[in-house]
Image 1: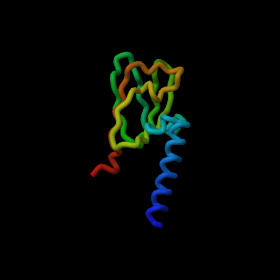
Image 2: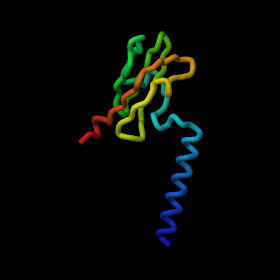
Image 3: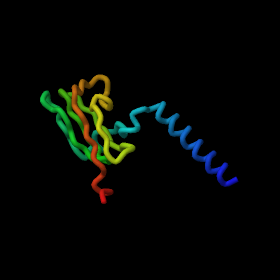
Image 4: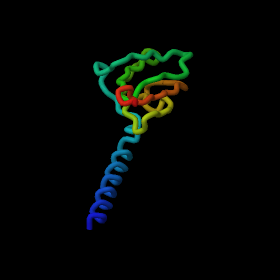
Length: 108
């Protein structure tokens, strides 16, 4: 009986997680937030090829006079992806790679 209950709970959790990811597929990288929550400000220039952030950072990106703020909360301890994946459609982020390091507070 306990095993059946355990399996039911796991199945429900996976279903809920899949439904949430289907609604907002970017949740694996974090979420947009207000600029006043930013810990850092990064200017993306024409020669910028990559940026380094930590999991848990909240960063305002300034790209060609347009800005957006993102709170990084990745599912893995480290993550690599294109900035364009999280930038609003109106912001041309170019070919900039984001390297997300594990949160320094939890490194052992």
